[in-house]
Length: 337
Image 1 (cartoon, rainbow, N blue to C red):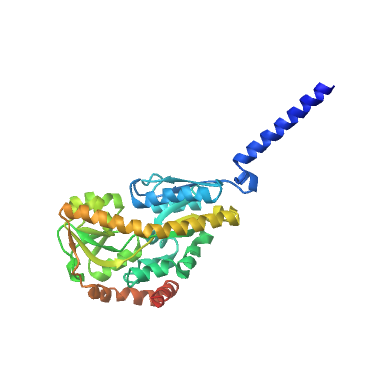
Image 2 (tube, rainbow, N blue to C red):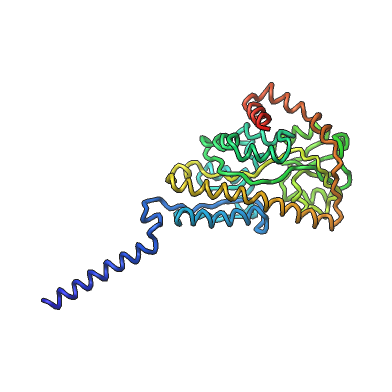
């Protein structure tokens, strides 16, 4: 009997040690804290070597650490799950958890988001940063919450300008007779009309062939597009008509299922990513410009910005008369300068 008692005591001690060992490996895990675990997929349409993908990959690691392993994010690049609009629709259908999209795309889901696509709504980069880092952007993130997704943070994507195969663009008159590729955004189409050019909507992946085959005369995008289009571009012209940020969005359903601590882990690390990315983006722009110059792209800086701004005033007048909700954001942004 004494031997049996000793064996029982040893067995009990072993079981306690085993349980303690298990708890030691995951003492801060979702299992021990009672939090739900989340395995999230974040889709985007850029390549793995793009600065955005690199930044979001590092962010995924930071989220996992800050959430004590309760949130993992898998980044799915290259448009594998479809276009930006496709990904948002998948989030709404419960088939995807997160995506990175241009704020211009969000205007197709909530018209107020078109405000960041209004030409020259931001005076300069400092004004742009002030708005996107402040209360106005936070209010905009919530615009689509009832539609199944909400904004989490933003990433700089520089200013958008015109680039062409053959024609330098210094004034709006230089766009007359030219066919320019734009995003699938009514604001971008309206801008081309106001400036006297013609717009052709197509996917980013189709621009190179379209310019090569003279189906379009050019496109408008930030300078990093030269990484893909320098071989068919002669002029990149700094009219800087828009500054449209990238936005990371998340399913409202998933967000509401997270604990306060998990949401804090997401937002804190997201804000850090956004801040760090500003320098990363600037370095990326410099790198792409240098490579494009080596391929013979000429960068036009003597652009009559005032003429472009004046030509776009009809867009402001139309918003004021026909879309007061969006125009209210225009006024808030301009008052924040």
